Every structure is written in structure tokens, then in C-alpha cells.
Length: 227
Length: 113
Image (cartoon, rainbow over all chains, first blue to last red; front, side):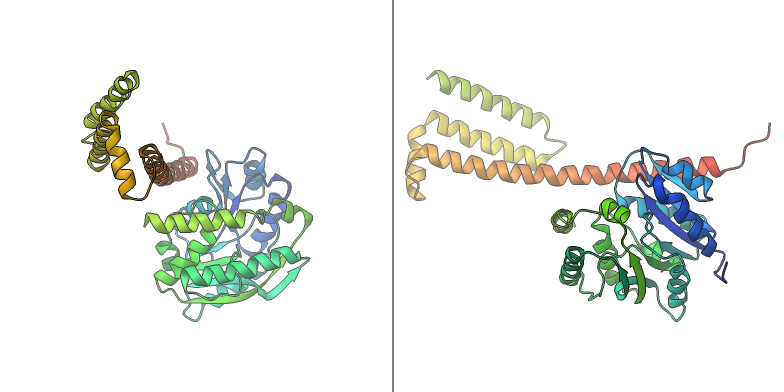
């Protein structure tokens, strides 16, 4: 274990990740002992394996979507007194050692640290995904005004005050853009941190389909109408 | 003449139902009653629909009614969709809060007898 503050919490949203979630949590807990797994209506043993690996588990009665799961986990961590909150994917794509890097990046006056695979490293990333993510960066820029190098990276860190200002209404995958939009709206100071994303057959099968990009865009536009 | 009776009866039902919902959604009620009354007018005086259609560059009154019906249906569909999204947001908040309360109950120490 490194010199990570005791009150750092890692929030992991998960849906049917029983195959890998135990290993992921064990690796994360070597870096940070406080892990909150939000079981988003899984129908397999995700919750039980997460508990066995030492995570605190919060379970949605039904599947709501990753955005809702993240907001639940963030709220839960805040209620437990978290000073910093890190969001982390359950499918093993992220490197737990980079949690410390993100927290350290918040040190000099930043509110939010956003992981960037394009400033860091990608391993076995398919070309189609690269193209979609690059396009998503431009869509993000058009909708939020923030020009980031990576649009949908689940590895992020927030200070407590920044996390308290987050209020995710996008239950599904459009939450990634919503987070960036709220960073811009609340004028939070952010920094992009190079991270490594490792694509595996498992993570690619579990990851969202490219066709879902259109649904995300429609979600964002309709949410704009509702405001 | 038979269809005019049927259509008038249906439109009258729409007006009555909309009237009963007035407190819950006054704008929608007023809109629905106005549309139903205009519909009733054209049912009773179909030639007038033709005149209105001609004045806006449509050949037949029936085409005018059809186009307007499509437009209103699309607006109603969008309105319903947006309402569903709002209802879904409330539903998501409810499930999230339930999950948090359950976890707090599970985390709290047992009461001593």
C-alpha cells in the first residue's frame, strides 16, 4: 500500500462482472482500501464476489445504467466521508496503480483529474474504437466547450467538493459527456492525466457497442430540451 | 350522416374527458378541447374544410385534416416521450435512494435488546 490518504474511495459500477470483479477489486484494494462497488442490477454473482474481495456493495434493485450507478456510488462515498473519489471500470481495463497518480494530480489546486488514454497508452485498442472516441471528443467539445483529448474514460478522480457538485441525470452512457458538461458549468479546475487502457477480449465484449454512440447523442440532445 | 353521428359522439367524449382532466393539465385540456371543437366543426360542415384547404394551397379538405392530424400526432408523441423521460428520471432517483438506504441499514450496527 502506498501513502494514499485514508479517505480516498474508489467507486466501481458493475453489471454482471462476476468473472473478473473479484480480481479487479483485490488489485484496487492494494492501492486503496476503500472500494465501493455499485451492483447495477446484476443477475450473476457480482455482488457476492465483490463482498468477498473486500468491497462495500450497494445494489440497485434493477439495472439503471452506468451513470446512475456512478451517482449512487459517489453519493454513498460522500456519506461515508470521502475526501477524494475515484471512478474505475469493473472490466479490468484500468491499471489500479494509476489511482495514486490521479490523486496526486489533484494536489496543486485541481478539482477533477480526468484520465486520458490518448495522452497515455492504449494496449490492443481497435481502430474503430479509436475513431469513435476521437469523434466523441469533438462532440464533447461542441456540447460542453471543453476540448479534451479523451471523451469517455471511466478513470477519473474528484475532490470532495467537486463530487458534491456533481448531479448526474444521465442514467446511461451519456453520463461521460454530462460529467464534462458539469465540470464546465461549475467552472471546476481540471487536469488530464495520462493513463493506460488495456483492451482485452472480455472488455471489448462487455464494452458498449459502437452503434450506441448515436443513442448517446440523442440522449444528450433530448436532455438539453428538458432543461 | 351515420359517420357524422359517430364522429360527433367520439369528439364529444374527448371534450368531456379533457374537461375532467382540467385541474391536472390545464394547457393540454384547453388544447384538446379546442382541437375537438374544430374537428366537430369540420364534421358538421365538411365543405368549409375544403375552403380552408384551398386557401392554404391544399387540394382537398380531407388532405388538410390528414396533414394536420400527422403534425399533431408527432407533437403529442414528442410530448409523451419527454414526459416519459421525466418519469424515468424520478424512477431512477427512487431506485438509487432505495439502494443507499438499504446499504445504510446493512452497515448499521445491530440493536442490543
